[in-house]
Every structure is written in C-alpha cells, then in structure tokens.
Amino acid sequence: MEEVPQRLAVKPSWLISQLAVHVRRLVTDGSAAAGARGYHYRILAALHEFGPASQAQLGRRCRIDRSDVVAAVNELVEQGFVDRTPDPEHGRRNRVTLTRSGLQQLRRMDGVLDQVQDELLAPLSAEDRQTLTRLLGRVLAHHQPE
Image 1 (cartoon, rainbow, N blue to C red):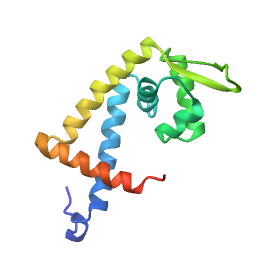
Image 2 (image 1 turned 180 degrees about the horizontal axis):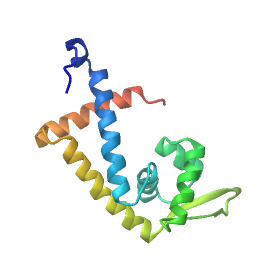
Image 3 (image 1 turned 120 degrees about the vertical axis):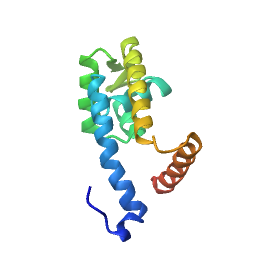
Image 4 (image 1 turned 180 degrees about the vertical axis):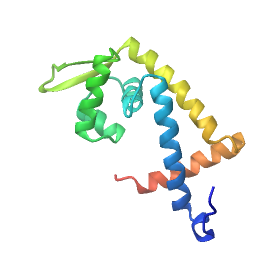
C-alpha cells in the first residue's frame, strides 16, 4: 500500500472517508451473502423497533430518499419480508408491516452486521470499540438536522 502524506493521515475527515469506503464494501458483501440489499436492514430494523409505518415514515426514520424506500419496500414485499396494505386511516397511504419471515431475515442480517463490526474493529479492545462508537455517535448527533 502506498504511503499517505502525513497531513492527510492525521485528519479525522480523511480517516473517516477511507473507512467509509471499506465499511461500505464489507456491508455490501455481507448483505449480499444474507440475500439482502442496500436499505433492507434499515427498513426491517425500523419496522421491528417502531412497528408498522407508512413509506414516508420509513424514509424519514431510516434517512432514505422516498423513491429508494419505494424500491426497497417493493423488493421486501416480493421476498415476503414485509406486507404493504392500504392504511385504513389514510386512503392514499400504504402501511408497511414486518412479517415473521422479515423478522427472521432481520436476525440473519444482525448476525452478518455483527461480523462486519468485528472485522472492522478487530484492532480495538472492547472498551475502545465502545468509546469509538460513543464518540462517533456524538459527532453525528451534532450534525443531524433537527
């Protein structure tokens, strides 16, 4: 591997961007191994934690663009991981619900993503992993729109 200029190697923004490329590859490969794609985990996790939701709610909760939510929900419906039905309280809105198969898929994906975390953070102790996670969460929370 080529050496990196020192002024880059000490910039958190550069380090984070380099890790982001690596993490994206790990997550993509792990998701594919579990028969999943892109936004599936986010959507299944949100439905499990918060219950049935409209596609618009899923987009906001998961930070996914509306058109991407529609495409991902379509894929999840085809796989039997979610049900999409008209919302009885709002005629033009769909209600998305996690299925039993979807919960099983979410658990498979939990295992895959746990392995990704272990691979990514292998050089760190358990305490360092918790510290890194806490600090990254704090930085991200500071930059999230309200």
